Structures are given as C-alpha cells and as structure tokens.
Image (tube, rainbow, N blue to C red; front, side, top):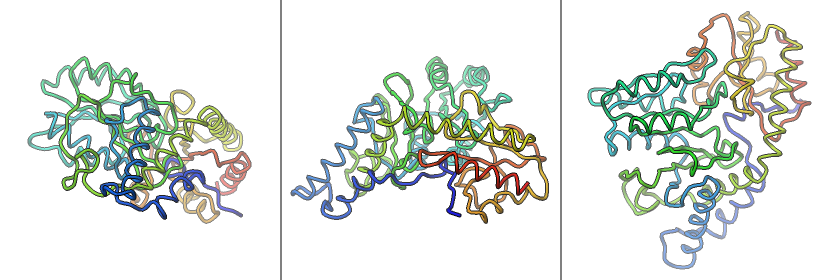
Length: 374
C-alpha cells in the first residue's frame, strides 16, 4: 500500500509549480542580492518582486513584509519587539497557543514582564469577555498574542473582535497566522493587527521560509544585527529561492482558493461523517463543525489497549497522522491543547489534516484501518 499522508497541518508537499519557480535561483540566478553587478541586481529584483506580491496578496504595503526563516522566528521576533521596543509589560495569551509562542512568552516572563492566560470556552474558543476584563484590569501596557487558527483542533479566532478589544485598551496585538495564511483570503487593510506570522511550508511552499508582518506605524529595532538586509531589520544573505517559492506558493493558493478550499472541506466533512458511521464512539475536539479550519479534524477515541497504540499502528500501516503539533511529537506528554480544553484521560486524540492532494478513497482506507485496529 502506498503511504497516505493526512498530516498537512504539520507540513505540506511542495507544489511542482513552486519548485519550478525556485529552480532558476538555485542554478543560474545565484548572485548575492547585495552585489551591485547584474547577478546581484537580478536576485535583488526577485526578492523585491516577491515582497510586492506577498504584500498585495495580504492587503499590506511592501514595507510591512519582512522575510524570515519561518513562523517560529516571526513569533519570537514579534514578542521580543513588543517587550523591548514597544514597552509591553504584561502578555496575555492562551494555553492552546503553539509552543513557538508559549515557550517564548515563558522565557521572557519574570521580574519585568508578567503573563496570564485568557479563559477558554468549553468548545475551545477564546473567552472574549475574559480577555476584555484582563485588559481593563491590567494597569500596564499589554501584548495580546492569540493565534488566528489553532493548529491542533482548528478553531478560528474572531480576529476582528480581538483587535477591537485590543485597540480599546491600547494593547499591542500579535496573531500567529501560520495555519491561515495561504488557506484563507487575508486582507490586512481590514484587520487592525500589529504583527502576524506565516510559514510557507503550510501551503505547499518551501520549508525554512516565512514572513513577519509589522504594521507601518509600529517601530521596532533590528531582529538580527549585521548587514543591511531586509531594510536593516534582519541581517544575513537572503534565502532567495525560498523567498521566491513562498511568494509563488501564496499566489497559487489564492488563485485556487475557492476550488481547493471547497474540495478540502468536503474531505473533512466526509471523514467526520464516515467516522461517526463506522466508529460511533468517536468524538470531535474543538468547534469542528462551526468556526473551524476546513483543513483540520481532531477526533478522540475511547482509551483502550488498542487505542493507546493507535499512532504507532497507523504508522506501521503507512498512514501518517499525528496526536498533536509536529513540533512536539517527539515528547510523550500528550497534547497540551487537548489537555487544556478537555483533559479527559480516558480518550486518545488523533489529528487528521487534509490538502488538495488527498482523496476520498484515501479516507475510506484510513477509516477502514481504524475500524480494524480498534
């Protein structure tokens, strides 16, 4: 049996058209963008054209887009800059953020910076009333860092509602948009946010590429010191082919959004229905049938000797899924997201996540295998 890949929230396969766009910058167009001669000028043009394309697709200005090595670097930079440059003394986040945010906040929390978690509703959504109460009572400048969509359960944040609350209390707002950039049309002209983060490998672009959006009136100091790259904000020779690939992947994702999103959503619905039919004891985590990513379905199965080995046995059967964030899959500690919203020790959670390359036939095979294993 060929491998079946249903872990697209962890990473996606590189699109062939993206690879073709990248290849010239791995071969003939190898110049350093900081060089003044033709080889340098052609790669400098590629970087700036990519920046313009990304900005246009996100409703931003090119000066607001900074290329990074991925979402983790972008998250780290936004949080550090908010403390160091923007005077934030308290950080409000949630217990279900990605570890790129949670661990960064924990690192800086101490004598000068405090942190708190916003309450979660039973379905895993952010309690907006609690967020407003915390900001009203803070008495100091705050950073609010809340992800646009949760990478494990798929819940979508009411990003404009959070933005309005942040503006009311003068808070800086950062949103980890790693799971939504490339999967939804995002217009930063209509979303009042100070920072967003994105990663190319989540939408069929190359790994090791990302962006940090910094709103024009937000002034921060350099992320990495050295040369004058990224308008003196991030020193180091640019990842030319990665940047070109990121922009091309985002363009393709938005060009085909209507068709691809409808197809992928149909796969999610099909799998949820089939699981309920074939395995009636299954339950779903988060607001899976409401305000949720169309790419993610998180299912729980009753704890038993068989379900405890489910991930391992699926892997043996060439089925790739996960029990949580890929960044934490090496640690046998369970999902911090599932623990935060339910903490039911009598269930085993599995995340299935879909892409345009998956098929209903694959889902039929996976559900049949689950039924035989359980």
